[in-house]
Every structure is written in C-alpha cells, then in structure tokens.
Image 1 (cartoon, one colour):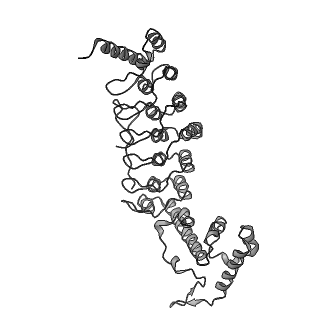
Image 2 (cartoon, rainbow, N blue to C red; image 1 turned 90 degrees about the vertical axis):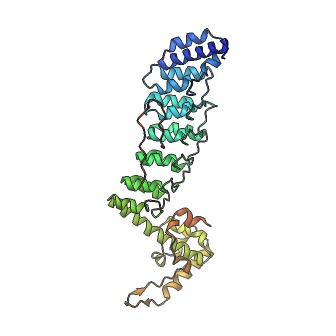
Image 3 (cartoon, one colour; image 1 turned 180 degrees about the vertical axis):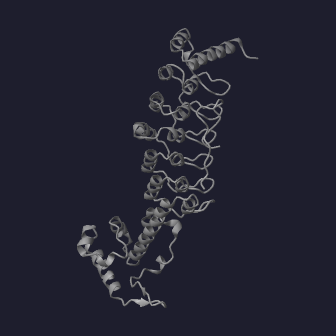
Length: 373
C-alpha cells in the first residue's frame, strides 16, 4: 500500500503537471513557491513516463510554452528523461512543427549540459531524425551547429536502418542534406530494403537531390531489393535523372581507367591531381609538361608520365575484325574489369523502389507514432 506521504507527493506532481500542460505560468510559479520539494515535483513523471517538460512541449497550442520550458529548466527539470516509448523532451521538440517558438525551445534544450542528442527512442530514432524532418532551411543553421557541438552522430540508424539523410531526401530538403553530407553522413548507407538515399531521390524524381548525392559519391549502380538507382529512375519515368546517372557512370569509368593506367606506372598517388582538372585517357596526349607542373606533380613523375604518353601514342593502332581502330592507349589489365559497384571517388583514390514510410501527422493522440514504423 502506498504511504500517505507518497500519495500526497504524487498528487502534488499530478497537479503541477496539469498546470504545466494548461500553460498556467503564474500558477505554476506560485505552486512551487509553496513547496519545499520543488525538485521532485518538477521531475514527476506520469504513468507514461512523461514529465511536465514533455507535456508542455507537446501542447503546441498552450500559452507561454517557451517561458514555461525556460522556467522548468531553471528549476532543474531533467532534459534527458525518457517516456515509456523512449522519447526525451528533445525528441518531442524536434517533432514539433517548424515555428519560431519551437525553434527557441529546441535552442534552449540544446544549450543544456545534460541534454543527450544521440539517445534513441524505441523506434531507433534520434532527435536529429525528427529535426531533419521539420527544420530544414538556412534559418535553422544555428541549431544544426548546436547539434554538432553536442556531438550528434549523423550515421545513427533507426529500426529501418535509415540515417537522418533518408528523411531529408524523402522531404527533399537540400539544405539539410548538404549539412549532413558536410558532417560525414554515409551517402550509400542502405536501409532494410538495401535502398540508398539515391534510390529514394531517383524514385521521387528529385533531380537536385540526386545530383547532390552523386556529387558526394553516391553510387548510381548500387543494387537494392528494387534494383539500382538507375532502375528506380527508369521505372518512375524520370528521364532527366536517368541521363544524369548514366553520365556519371561514364565519367567514373573514365576516372577509374585513368587511375589504373597510373597504377601501371606506380604513380597512382597523383591521380587526384589529374582528376581534379578532369583529365582522362583521351586528354592525356594533349597534356604538356607545363600542365603537369601546374598540377604540382614533381619533375620525375612528370617526365615518366609524359614518356609513357609518348610511347602509347607511337604505337600503331590495331584493327578489329570490322576494320574499326582499337584505341592504342593501353590500360593495364586490371582496368579491363570495371567494378561498377565500387565507382566512388573515395574508392577510386582511396584504397591507396524506394520504400516510403507514411509518417504520422503531427502529434498523434498517444504520441506513439514515429518516423519508422
């Protein structure tokens, strides 16, 4: 049986939470002034594990929301308390619509020492997953910076193996996607259906987003349960994206051929110098020593490259059976087998469809709806 003291404590907590949810700011302050145990009251949680801070953040139509949040924080309310579904106050705030008031509330939470930005709820979503769903343009840049300062991990995946980047692609929020990419998100991360963000962009017909992802190294030939991104674009009739993807494939094939040719000379470490200026095997014969000098390639390697180009150019072209010329510029045998599943700039230089999830409307009654279902 609950003690009388414990019962009274719960009643005080329930009364306080009720005042908070109603936005009764002055009554909240007067109520706490009369209590000696204000810390336990402000941190009282109901049967759903929600504190007054959860409640006032979710009550988007309540009066004085920002002031009450600020007051509760000053009274040492927990900013990391999880409810029964794993939602912290920051999860709730980031799930709210993009309004100036909600912006300020998120800012207040992110400036607290005790706030946890990488905590996941029962669906595996971090606050950043929800933030990227609702706060998406340059006006939110300072909040993105606060997430970064707090150590937000952009590669945490939810139960569907989706990073926050998937959310920005689904919503076509280019600014948010750029921020995530700049802060190290893995663009070719695959979800439960083995789809990458590029699969989604191609299925949705978002050309700008698809171009951004490919610029960041996304693979247009990455296989999923629904085919490659090119397959997705073709299936949805997004011809402009198909054309862009095919151009990227051809470009990367040429880049890989150049890298392999340099490997044959033992000079692959200079591939980035040449690729930065968009040199390929076709343009090498036009290259001069001054060009290589401009690319900051040392004298010795410069002479070796020029000599190799000269030797290749002097070879007599062979003929195929149909009398067409075979390009005399030979590439080492390793370049004859192109691994299209590895065609990213990182892999070229560094070794040394679509499943839409129907997001709930804002604030379902029981707040049990999440991004991943």
